[in-house]
Structures are given as C-alpha cells and as structure tokens.
Image (cartoon, rainbow, N blue to C red; front, side):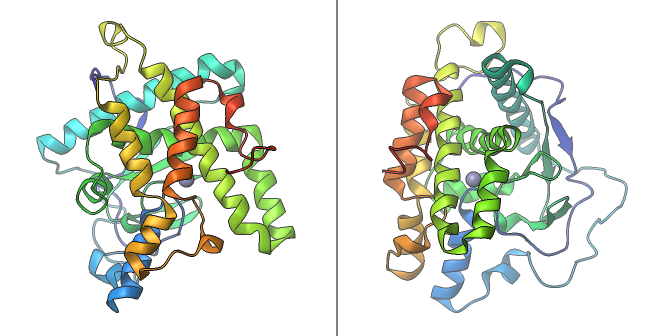
Length: 288
Ligand SMILES: [Zn+2]
C-alpha cells in the first residue's frame, strides 16, 4: 500500500495521557479472542495484558509527552493517511451528510465517552463522541496472534471502524441499539448485521483506494496483494475462527461479528461494487 505522510490532523494523540482503567467490549473482534483464550487456558489474560482491574497510575492526566520509536511514529503517519483517505472517500460519496471525525490513539487504556477501554478490547468506535479509538499495539496482535499482517490489513481494521461512524451518522446504529433493547434475543443477530455492514463499508473504501494513479496525488493506493491482506484479516477475525481457537467449538448463536466467510463476503461486496447501497445487511439478502 502506498501513502504519503501528512500533518496528522486526523489524529487525536492521547498516547502520552492514557493508561489504567477498565475496558469495554466493542470493536473488531479482538476482545473476544482474549476472552475465549482466558476461558480456554484458565488464565486471566486480561490482567496479564494490562487491561481490567484497578486503574493503574501510569501517566493518567500527565503531560502528554510521547516516547515512541521511529517505527511507531511511521505507523501513526500511516493511520493518519488512511483516516484522511477514508474520510475523503465518504465525503465524496455522502457529501454534507458526512461529518469528519478523528482517530484517538491511546496506550493500554483510555476513558472515552463510552467508558473505559483497554488495549485488549481492540480498536473500537464510540458513538457518543464519534471517535475511532486505536491502541497501535493491536496491529502487533493482528499480525502475530491472528496471523494477518500487512498495512492494508491494518487499513481494513481502521476503515471498518469508520464504517461504524457511517452507521452512527445514518442513524442505523441507534435503530439497532433500540431494537436490541426491545428484543434482547435478537441482539446477537443484529450485532452481526451491523458488523458485516461495517466490513462492507470498509470494502467500499478499498474499491476507491484500488484505483490506479492515486499515489501520484498523495492519496492511498493499493499494491498487488493488498486485497488478499484485507481478506486474510477479515477471515482471521471471524467469530467461528475465534471461537474455535478459544474453545474448540463453534456457536453461531453467540456470533457478534459474523463468521470468517461472512466477513470476507461482505468486505468483497463493498470492494467489488464501491457502492454503499450494496451493503444492506439488514435487507432481504440478510447476512448470508
Ligand atoms: Zn465493528
């Protein structure tokens, strides 16, 4: 994936001011694998990984100075470039209905308008303040633990969270939450529909980013093999795969994000069409 360094105006850098606190279970699916692995191994991985428990005194509310390696700083520039590109894409698709937001970077844990979040919850979107939240260490997990490496795999994760922003702006997210309150038994099924739609929206951006000649004007441009990276990532964090990894069993009624096959299918649907109207996971074609 090719991209150009910008001025980071899509980033809200809280890396020097986060740390400590409890987590909330939202995001792209990483949380679940930790929960399942904890169940499986009998070890509380949350405490090992630094989330949960009593707030830790690390750097809460202090200075905000960031100690980061050049590698991490390059990652921040990449996140900024992808966030800019995703937002420009949605602005051209939705016009004034799109409202720009930022990626809040944190370390270990942070208090969002949606509550405390830990790194182990994975990246997430908070509808209450409209920010995408990301601890950069998730990208290590994605590559080492889930076997999905590459910058476009990372970009897919980000674009998926921006997909939740679209759902928040369109009112879909609020409708689903309302429906889940009214009928808790349908909560998992509608969560899957929301998540698959976010995957499809990520694909819609991918369609745009795959167009040739974009790098020359400083935009993100996919290289050969990048699509496969995203598909590998979508497959790697499917609920069936994570459940199998955690417990050795697959329990479709407990899916929250969709199976590997569903995630790949809906991402591809967005990627092939470039048309958000093809992302109607709530319609007749459902989540098949
Ligand atoms: Zn999601």
